[in-house]
Length: 261
Image 1: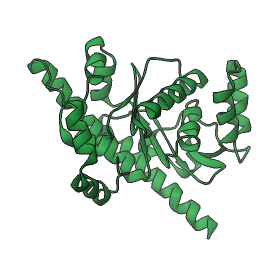
Image 2: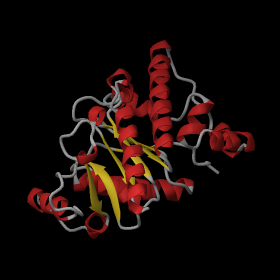
Image 3: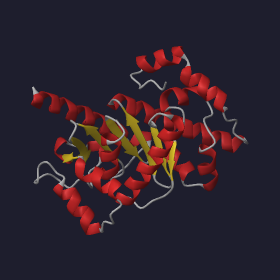
């Protein structure tokens, strides 16, 4: 039975990876982006370094232990590049498996510390058009432009300034999510990494895909609104109303999304 469950999980993660890596979406190309899924309280699957989402295979998903990364992120101890590489190698359940992505660390934290079941990290072209611009970065922090972004992507994105990928980024994400949870009382569904990309957190692979799709649409609308003139942002009262409506909760459940309130 355990083998069947793992096979199903692997197939679900592969399908998500292929969707996120579909070049027609312009979400990730070549070796960009990575995905992960929680296996149990101690381990998870994550994309191997250098592999491509679009044609990812089962042997390019590596099962790794959570604990080494959770300890490293919260320890405050300095790690050299060599220390980080050794940690990635030693965390593999199968020592003969491929090398996990260097971004495995933030996947471990989002799955192990903040309750996500699936995580998808992409370099969405529309989103990066904003995150790589001072005006765009400022605009996305001012709020949403339309209600369905709230329904699918949560009450607000979480924002992280540019940090070197690896342990430093994982620590910055951890701090940003902790601050977000203190402010909003929930875990974010989207994390925007400045000059880098999007992280979508979901209770299912379908939710990660839906969040990525809606975040892409929201970015395209933001770009259009900026081109037309001053974007008209929804107020905090509108966000609270939409996120608290019972009919919107029904829509979230029907779409397989985590209910926001």
